[in-house]
Amino acid sequence: MGVEIEKKYRLTMLERERVLKHLGEIKAEFCGEEFEENTLYSGGIINLKNCVLRLRRAGDNAILTYKERFESASAIKRQREDETKVESGEAMAAILDALGYKPALVYEKRRRTWRVGETEVVVDELPFGFFMEIEGAEQAIIEAEKLLELEDVEAEMATYPQLTAQHGKQNGAVIEARF
Image 1 (cartoon, rainbow, N blue to C red):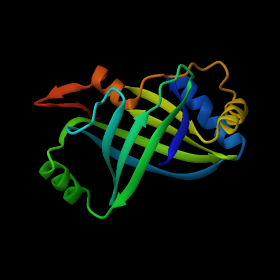
Image 2: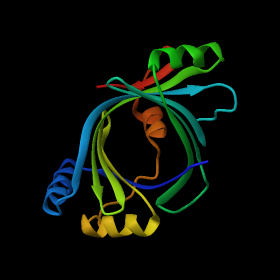
Image 3: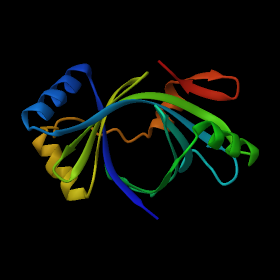
Image 4: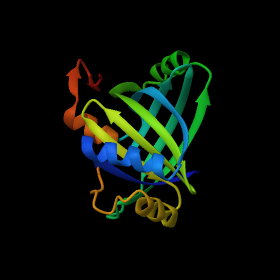
């Protein structure tokens, strides 16, 4: 079982531009940019309030992920995260459907990724706003936060699925947040 440790921030357009500028100034290692379609499934033991089954498609790549959030009041979240690359996103979607899992939420995201010290920093654009996540060990997250001068930026406690449920549009049985 893998454990993901991260802190998420909701950014204004001005804060986003400031973060992008700081990433350049500190010579963060740019790792790439991609467009993602994330489909979250319901069925079986899946309860979108505390665990998700997600099929992420980005270009020719697809990743199946199971996440289960651990209870915490901290802005730095910990959750179980097990994921695997799959050869065909379409075939995996067909397998999930055959097993009784149905799409419940779909959100699209534009993501830019950097390495900052011992952390991964991502700047995301979703149809309902700009966000940033810092992932790594807790102390490394705190160090990256200081390096990027984020002490005054509030943490976002909601997950992307929760935000999609809040801001997305109902399309049949699926809630979608698409560009």
